[in-house]
Length: 250
Image (tube, rainbow, N blue to C red; front, side):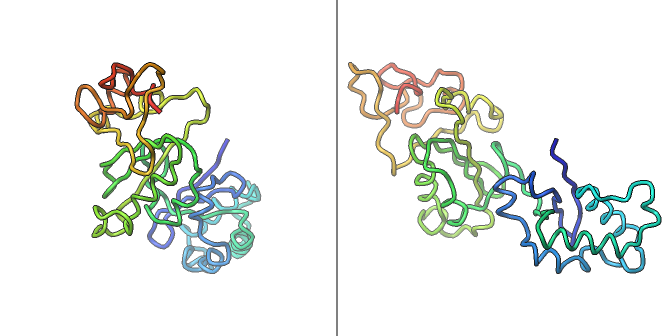
């Protein structure tokens, strides 16, 4: 079972966890080991005077390392706790990660090149947020990285004047071949996402119908013309002008 602590360090909410339990995203955003070790005096002010708050935080860190002195904690010098934590941070046995806001699929990541280029080149669903509010949901049928690249602020005029720090995204890539886009969207909150359109991206070819006898060369929603609403796709009620369901187009 994963163990983590929430601590206010330097007036910021941070997550402290064991390195072997961290996700790839958490490893990416973790404070570098030498930098974290150098912040110990600032993160735990007054430790040398046995400050109660700082001592309690240091004990929590030691709990994460399974080296807490247990019942004898009251007799352990705060300096020993501080030095043990500092060493663990330097060697990155413990990671300190800024608390990330959560989106529909996971932590909200800044929409910057550094985060996008690390995405897999596979199919998936992604949501773009502005001020933590979702305003665009895209469906990548083949390459989610290429689709998100065109949303980078430097490439898309719509975001050109929006500071990068307030444009974020999260994403989901199906884990099994049989998992359809409808299966994924069914897990989203219908009150928040239900009436949003599921958008295609110009970097991918039109979504042709799989049926051999169908002349449909691109999906065009029969009810709303263009992009179908999330609630219709989730309920398998999004139908193209050709009469076939959205999930039958690829």
